[in-house]
Amino acid sequence: MTNLEKMKKIRKKIIALNESDAKSVLMLTAANIYRVNSGNGSFTSDNCIDDLIRLYNSIPEPQANIEKNTHYKTIHIVFSDSPAGSLKNVLKEMGLQDEEKVITFSDIFSVGPVWHLHEKTGLNNRYEWLKKHINIDDEVLDSYQDKFNNTVSEINAIPIDTPIIIWIGENAHEQTALRYVLYLLKEKTNDIFVMDTTSKYKNQFDVPEAEFFPLHTGEISPDKLRLLYEKNGKGDSLTQNERKKFEKEWERLSTKQEVLRIWKNKMINSVNESYYDDYIIDTIRKIHIERKNNEFVKSARLIGEVMGHLNQYIGDQFFEYRVRHLIVNGIFEIEGVPKAMRYYSIRLR
Image (cartoon, rainbow, N blue to C red):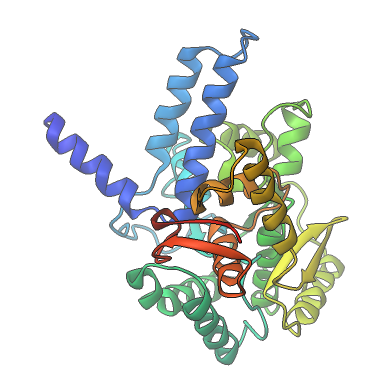
C-alpha cells in the first residue's frame, strides 16, 4: 500500500467517526501528550506512540463487518462507537474476535427524550426532538431510527444460553443505557454481567485525583481496556433482584419528559434542559474578563471550556443547542452562521 493510499484510508476512518467519538479520540491523544510533558518519567514518548498506534487501530473501519459466526460464547454491549472499536481491537489481540461479539448503541443517552423509548412512539419522539434541536449530519439523522432498531433487533436475537457483558461507567449516558438494555432483556434468562469501567479503572490503576480520569468507557485506551477485562473477567452475574431493580428504574425513567440527565450521588437525575445555561453564560463572561474585551468568542472555544470543567458526559452537541437557544433569547450576540459550532462566534450582549 502506497503512502497516498494509507492517507486515504486514515481519512476515511476519521471522517466516519461521529463528533462524540472524535472528541474521545482527541481527549485520549491530549491526555497522552500531557502525561509525557508532565515530566514524571513514568510515561515516555515511546509509551505515547504505542498508545496512539493502538488507539488508531481500534477505530472501526467505515464499512460494516461481515458476520462470520452466528453463535458466540459471549456478547458485549457498549454505548458508543469509540469503546466498540477499542473493545473489538482488544478481542482481536486476545484471539477472541470469532468467539465474542460486540453490539453497539451509537447514541448519547444522557441527552434527548427517553420517554417510552422501549416503544415505537418513544423512538419517534426522540428522533423528532433530535431533528429539531441538535445539529446532526443529514446522513446520520436519516439512518438514526433504522440503526437504533437494528441494534435492538441484535439484542433481541441473542440466544438465551449466551452470557452478556454490558460495559458502563459512572455517568448518566451509560447508566441510562444500562437500564434501557436490561429492560429490553427482561424476558431473557441469560447470565448478565456489568463491567463498571470507570470505577474499576480508578481502583485498578490507582489513579491520583490530579491525573486524567475517564468520564466514560470511550475515554479508556484499548490497552487499559484489555487489562480491565483480563483482570475482572465477567465477575458475578446480576441477580434477579438486581435485574428487577434496574428494570423498575427504567420504567420510572421512561415516564420522564426531561431531555437532560446528569449523574449525581450515584443516581440518574432528570433535570431541565436549561440546567447549564447560567454556567454557559458565566463561562463566556470569564473569557471576556480574561481577554479584557467583549469581542466575539468562537462557539467551539466556549463549548470546549464548558465541557472541560464538568464532571459529566453530556456531549458538545447538547451544549451547542443551548448556545443557540441563548442566542435566540437575546443573551448572546452572534457572528456567522449557526449550522455547526465551528461556523460562528458569540459574545454577551
